[in-house]
Image 1 (tube, rainbow, N blue to C red):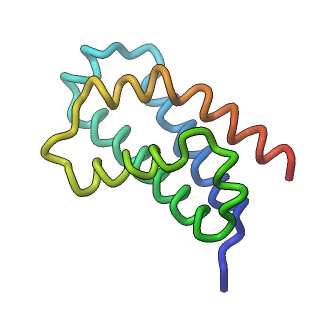
Image 2 (cartoon, rainbow, N blue to C red):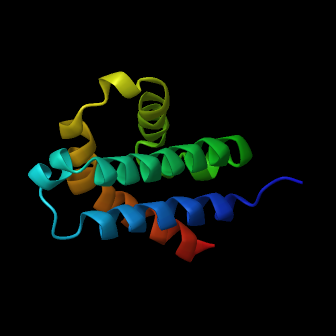
Image 3 (cartoon, helix red, strand yellow):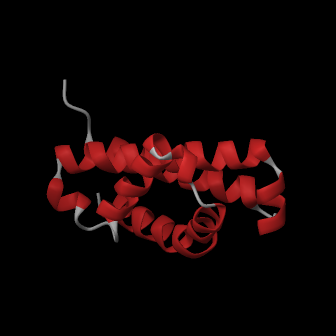
Length: 113
């Protein structure tokens, strides 16, 4: 049975919300010095990327409404397959700069449904 595209959006939103919760009141230095936090954040970004990869297979038109969807999927692939070259600054930038507008975009798409 095919998965509901909205379930993919919901999974991505839950993961984005988890990252926001994990990083609340944390600094870049906190992130760099806390392996558990790094692992948790990276895992949630992997979930977001995988949810968008599945969404793109199920409903490409909906996936295309997500800003930088392909880049997010590529980021997931780096986290999974290029784990040895993961840059903490890049991950933290995704948390602080890119995640808030992504959450807004996902919320807007869910609200449209």
